[in-house]
Length: 179
Image (cartoon, rainbow, N blue to C red; front, side):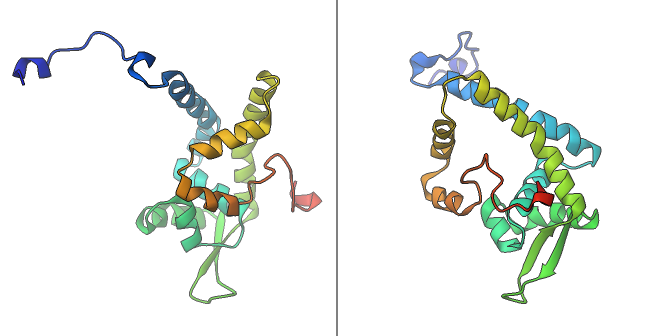
């Protein structure tokens, strides 16, 4: 290979003619950027990041989740979870209790402060989703859910089925005081 060709700039953009759906890729990039922007502002007030957001979210969606289960849901290492979880416990957003089924397990529960944070982070995202679905018009919510689920690696889809995300637009299982 000519050494000079490796360092020459390419002045043309790659396009869909290269066999890639850049439209959907870029829409996902921009959607994710904007979808996370509102919670990012709130998280910054606490000096928290997106890892804090994910932990607060799933602990609030599945109170009593064990540390091992949370690691499995997030697909992260124990080391990367430890620092962030410690901060959330130290700030009073999450409590860790000894497992009822297995005393060696640590179950995670939100506190009132943690519940309030989870809702503060989710509400602007929920509004954004609602507005997008309305703006899309005839688009069926179930089609969107199937599309997003299909983006998940096939071997992880059964794990998603275990999460309380079915009927995501509903408030199933919540007491009136928790809505």
